[in-house]
Image 1: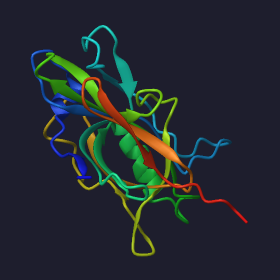
Image 2 (image 1 turned 45 degrees about the horizontal axis):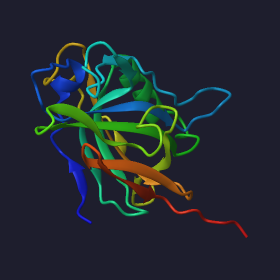
Image 3 (image 1 turned 120 degrees about the horizontal axis):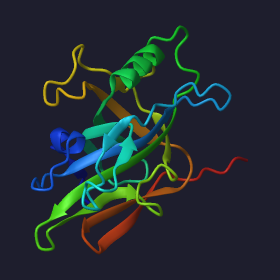
Length: 210
C-alpha cells in the first residue's frame, strides 16, 4: 500500500479555522512522553483552542496539544509514524526541559492521539481522515509507542527552530518534530479516504513473553 502522507497540513487553518477555506488540517489531541503516573513527567497541556472541522468548526471547539503540518505513515505494522506539529510557548518550554534533562528521559514511552481532517468536494464537508479506530482520534484512545532513534542514542524528537513560527504569529507557537515507533502490542488507526469509505489498519504487533 502507498504511504499515507499529509505533507502540507495548513497551520493557519488549524489555529484559526475559517469555514470558507477547504485546506486539510490536523491536530495532536493528546501527548504524553516518558509518562510517570506519580509525577506526570511528560504530560503536555491541551492548551490550544482549535476548531473541530467535522462539525461546523465553530460551535464545538476542542483543546489540543498541537497543530500539525506533516503526517507520514507507510502503513505497515512496524512502520514509524512521523509528525511535525506546533505547540504553545508553555509546551515548548516543557519539551525543552525534557530534552535537556540531566541523565535523559526516564523512558522513551509515548502516548499520542492524532486527528487529520480532509475536505470532500462532492459533499462539501470536512471529514476525519486519520484517527483512532474506535473513538475518532480523541484523547481517550491514544496510540502507545516509543520515540524513534537514529543510531543508538539520538532521539527523533526535537525543537528544530530556535524562533517561533512565522507562518502563524498569533498565538505564538513553536515547531516540534517527532518519530514514533509502535510498542509491542496490537493497535489500530482509522484511515478514511472519503466520507463513508474507511479502513482500520493495524499498527504494532503483540509479543508474548516466555
